[in-house]
Image 1: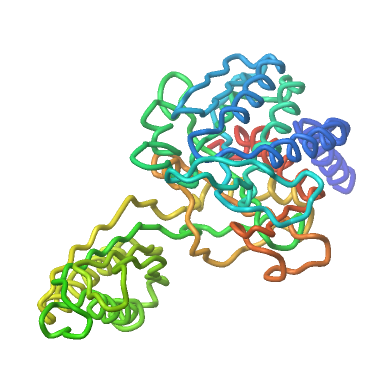
Image 2: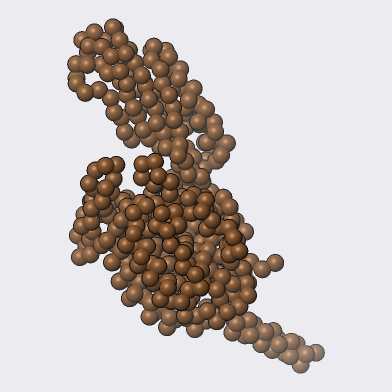
Length: 435
């Protein structure tokens, strides 16, 4: 009996060793070490040369040339204006998955003082503006370029096909243009013979360096653009009773709509935010104008709450305006859906993502009221969107400049965690999610 038990134990250990020997991630340490300086160099070059949404011509060319040089099976350009999609087929049969990085910068004047800080200029809403990678998209592109090289030089380990999606205009297309993830989907990036069945995206985030944070289900908020136009009747500022003051009405509206999230919605179903960020009306202090235009944003995490908020907002604005003899219109949209991490995909890929970060660094995050158009991909296929901590070592979450700040900067030592996550997801997906 003892001999039989020992024999059984030896067999199990042998089977475990065989399984471990088949881990496609084994033997990649040299590849990761070799690619790190390239990732950093790419990041610095892209950071120094940012481009605004739908104008990422230089970045797209750099990416496309890189993928062609790696011998990708297919490299498509000009998708959704400047998007690039590379297709890499592994040496083994398997599913098709996608990895995504966004490429656009923001109209922000950089104040980091980095030796590779941006001095670029661009045109935004008809104005000449500074341009900066203030949201970390430079790191996203560089990490995905790095993952592309590691996987292309290790095709023998890859089961299936990986589509590398380099997306323009995540920050929003300019003017009346279409753009971003929605346009890429419209132009077929998720359809055809190489349609992916799952997708992964990463985002540089001001939190503990090298961590990846996740949340099953809703993670980032739905975002609705909001515009309110209040029309009164112009008159002399000395005689307000002779007209209808849209500035006074707008002030009442701004105060009243803040009570919608706090007093009219069930807060246990998820947080909600209404922010007015811009008010325009009037040209002189002694003239009551005809019209005031307010613009802002709405953030929600629950579709039902979102619908209730929209209805309450329209009713509140209409009633306040009418009570003062004014009229008001509410325009909601364009909108971005909730970024929802697929729970089962998250569960299946957790061991891989823990491998990528190291023990204790794959952590559950809090709800984020920021929004991401990666959510459009997740409306069609299961997806994971994870936040990569890029603070300087020793700087805790909340103590570094936020995304969209002119001081935002990513610690480059964290970027290989992102590369490892992208590569690991690609190599393990076929077996980790097998029935």
